[in-house]
Length: 629
Image (tube, rainbow, N blue to C red):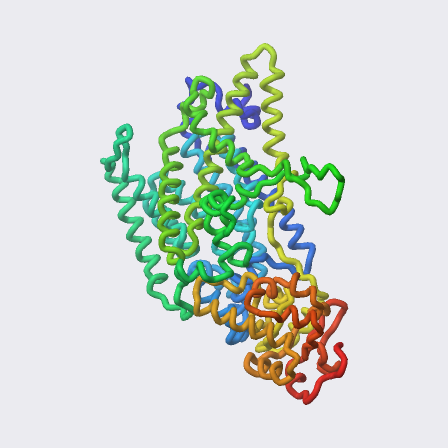
């Protein structure tokens, strides 16, 4: 077979096991390695295109989590923005230092943080792809296996909004693959550098790194555990733990002023921690308790949430026999854990036990033990984090990232073993139709399944980009106000205003009401309840008192805000439904809020959907209009 053809034909990378030592030293100096690495990077760019189209198609667009974790960094561009803003102060106080420093550096270079958060995802995806590829080569020195893992990696990127958010969690994956790569290469200084960087960007995963280093000190003689005799393992573990200690020390010593951290007992009494509220942690359904809480819970579950919510909906929907379109369809295609990276990762141990059928299995080296070591360390930390919840933040933060990384690496290797076996079968068989058909079918499934994939009933790819629903004139009107302007609202669009107008909210909604630090959360809840009461009070005096206390400049209202049905569809009103008493019933019985009777001269902006009331004008009123606006 010619050298040029070997670049394209995977079998050429895995043929002749007797000659495998020739492949055991795969390096980037080999042209065929560059080919598969380049193809992996091209795949990464192709999978980014839908997100790029979303970003370029709208003038007002921001990633969901970036509204909280990035927008406050506009202060790096203009220090006068968001003065005395509780949300900006909180997210700045709890943000990891490495992450904020990165955005600060680019801000000094003239790159707006909200622009940077749109530019970083492809860079992070490309870096992670390259690191994933070379990590696979340290376990199975076959570039085609690296390509398969890179393909699964990039498909997985767009099942969640981690990488696209450019928030601290987006940096987990490049650092995690880099950690494994330098660990397997036994390069101490780069390994310590990655440990330090991880702590500066997303410290929870730093505990996983330390756990892996400690687990690697164990060896097993059959089922009998003991300690390793390899001094290098001790050296790496001690050095890594020392670096981790000094990186984590500032987190332990800092006082961000928003404490204390919520305890497990307190969380059980807080509605927001119970399904289906904003910070859902606990569930009350005993029938699905073990599956949906311990395995698939949104924040408590051990497994990645996207694994638990796989749905190939367009392929198979069964409607009721009576043809009633109002009845929900039966999701025959909903398959938990029905993803290639999960299926083929679980198959890998079996494939490794069948080297006669899968000859390439003989060349999966001992570095594969890191899979079990990583899972063991993560599960142990998951249990610890649950026992001390929420002192170490959320339990699933210690397993979900590890499980994804391990599954991607293991599945890529498993697929390489299967493809190699099929191609060997095709070369040796008289009738090649069967192996060729199986290889073609497997290829089609790997490349085609994202076309039908849905996660949490959302079509693939998942970006969670939020597109402004208001007219551009509304954003322009508010952006033209003084920098210390404060906006009161419970309209869902309020959460976008800091990003699109660079003006502060009196209090935000979903995404802003984070319950893990009670000093912050109690203030947010208190303001939210006071705002709701003020919006619906019939008393002008009560309304004016709230405006003065919270220094409100403008009040954003949806035109349907005073209709009874609004209480069933507005997220803030639903979240706090158990705390606002009989207010919905009062509105339904005819209570007329003061804000609905504001004279036209106090309306600063209005369109078909929204009305912006000048709060300073409201303070000058002695009486209200007789009829609601």
